[in-house]
Image 1 (cartoon, rainbow, N blue to C red):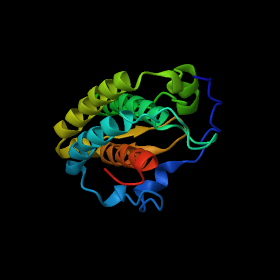
Image 2 (cartoon, rainbow, N blue to C red; image 1 turned 30 degrees about the vertical axis):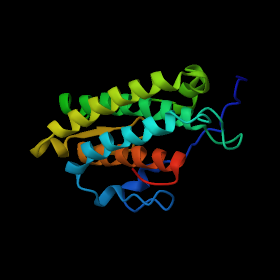
Image 3 (cartoon, one colour; image 1 turned 180 degrees about the vertical axis):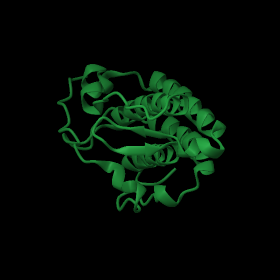
Length: 179
């Protein structure tokens, strides 16, 4: 398999998805109840397993768009990063999250060359970890605060909603439909 060219980094601030529905995937993170998020994350795994079983999973639709395999690797790593952030918010007062460059990670971790079956198992495990953790949040914990290094402020509830948009959106990226 030839080495893929890096994707032009997405430098948009996607926090707007907390205020209005995404015009691409249609998900309305701000209006979706947080108690539905664990099921939403778990349901996405079934779709990812189907996607990762496709024969064309490593093929990019065009040079500027990740392949389904690369999106699955990103979804796996995003679940891990967001779980780390969720833990910080639940255990510390007003933490600042470490930077995560998703585009650099894709290159360094060679997303395009990873084994789809392994990615499917890792994505399922990371998704279950964060879904289970979200399911334990209750009461005043939803209002605990954290901050991204660029200054974006989150509560546990808004972080979970923001992450859930990521889950839905990337399924849409590779299937054209929501989970």
